[in-house]
Amino acid sequence: MSSAIVLHGANEQRGGIYFVTREKILSKEMTVLVTRILAETDKTIRIAHDVAHLFPDIKMEVHVDVSNTDRESATSSLASMIVGYVTGNGFDCKIKPEAFAAATVADKHSKLGNLHD
Image (cartoon, rainbow, N blue to C red; front, side, top):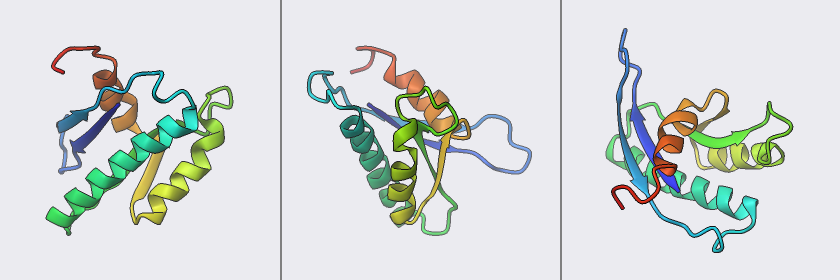
């Protein structure tokens, strides 16, 4: 499970900088998809609260690894619940395909296997 903080949005910025936290979760520990998605989302929200506490004037979005546009996606039925959870915590929420931080940065680091553990 990976969570990423991606800094972007400066005028005419190309690229950006990011920080990633990874936690190894054995698949047998989280066999139910909704449990895994809620755990990932909760971890990201906790990090977002920490960042918001340190930098109260920044605009922040939480990007989550769910999609409501791809009806064949296993997470499509969870999208509205997850968006509600994030927005209920006071953050703007992006889901795939708009959730570039989840779709690129966090996914990339989730699939690295045992590198840098």
